[in-house]
Image (tube, rainbow, N blue to C red; front, side, top):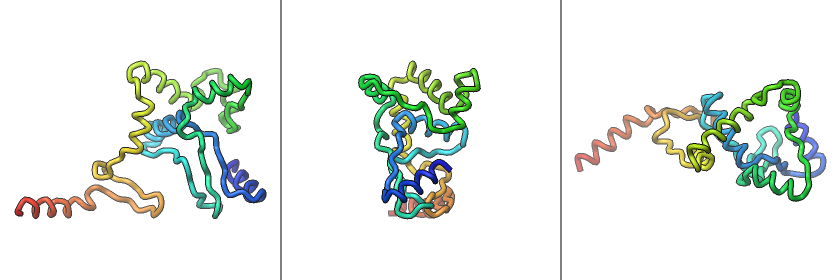
Length: 168
């Protein structure tokens, strides 16, 4: 509902874009959450065309900016930001004594531990969403068409191509 309200208000104001504050760390955490809790490989995109609000676009201008840099800038300029605009997360963080009250917080802690062992773990996770080789993926669904693709769909054709090359 929150996103829908934003789109409607933007449209009312004559805007065609909504800028969200997601940053690099959010992207990496989202990739991990998708893999570990959603059994899917996907990422948060820097730009998205709205499918439910024609002519509207969602942008994330802080996509490549690390959270620590944003916090440093905030502190240098004596600013204070809201922790999260999501009521569910906000209520959970105030009512649950455990800091692990959200999956995102869990991912932050997991990444913290991984950084102790692997220097570039954040960048490696991020780049894994850029360096996808569809020829080595068992299956994938096209978000645009909804079509499911499986490696066996093309396997026999590939086998024939290899056989023909062998006979040359």
